[in-house]
Image 1 (cartoon, rainbow, N blue to C red):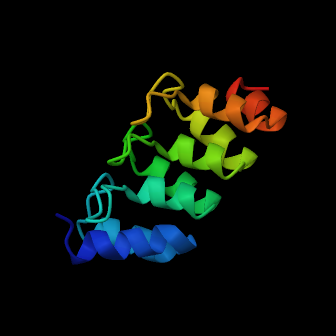
Image 2 (image 1 turned 30 degrees about the vertical axis):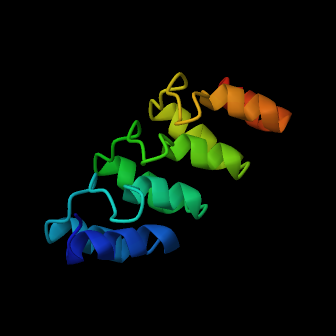
Length: 127
């Protein structure tokens, strides 16, 4: 169950409010806390809201790039669904698990191939 600091962190991550992200973490928010709504971390929320700067800030503060929500989706998978190449590249560079499976048993690459977006596939392969 998240507390007020983590809730503030989640909201800041959705809007790339870097000042608030840093403030919440300095006050003791857990960078890897999971929300009451589907166990999303701030990193997953940032990916879901296309917030590259928040992702960079959270990764710098130790966010777990391999964390999964209740559907087994990582921040990387959210970025793939949103076709966000810049975020995909950042998360791959940070060590995202390309073999992690969501609750449907699909890997990130399988999801990307199902969407037929060649640029996403290239980004996942580090190209």
